[in-house]
Length: 308
Image (spheres, rainbow, N blue to C red):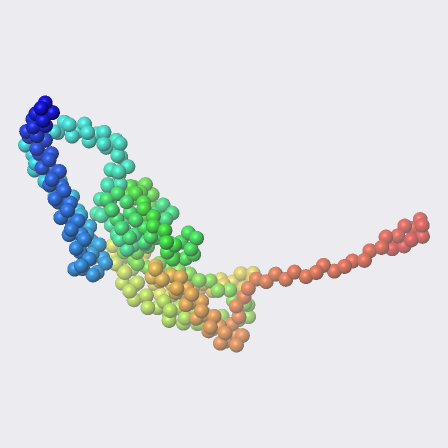
């Protein structure tokens, strides 16, 4: 009987009743938010729109939970202020990394560090951002044991607090292109003008499509930032060294297609060189090892009558 009476007395406490109301409200809001999130793929086919809508639904759900909880405890808010202050100080000390990650999420959302779909370099990890949650950024990694900019299959999660500690490299923010170069060694005696023309022609055919769009994006960069104007068109330069003439092609390319375009450039240039019938020849460093000749040596002792 005493236990039952204690339960009844406990349930009659207004604070306990409000806590129960809050728990029920949080459960109902969570079920509604989850149902809405699960129903999004049925009506929206676009990946970007679906992703951002789900994030918005979750964010609204958190806001509703906060507002509902605040409305329930609004009458006892003054009494709970001191308690929440003490508890908050302890939580802030114990969860300082979590709080820093939340602050990083706010900075990422408002400061335009990066967004889902961008290619970034964070703490030595390069890859595409596939998700940004309140505490962590999820990246599909590129490189490492795989050359160039191809996915290697690893998914990396990085705390959002990282944006306050080290630089954030974004390959695709305001200027979704990168400059790349290829170098070709050409033998001395080759036709320099023809070589330059071949490289320029192949470059215009392979990566020339990026030039108009890249110029527009770069003009926006010049107006937005304190940065000098740069040449966007493919450029061929020549340097002569002790072994061969070194032609360098500099060009802009989509950051996701760098390796494929480099393959097209090399293939096109080599095909054109083959058609020159020797007027242009590629150079290479060759080391040829030969057998050491045999030396026959005879020693003679003059005292015994021997001679060399």
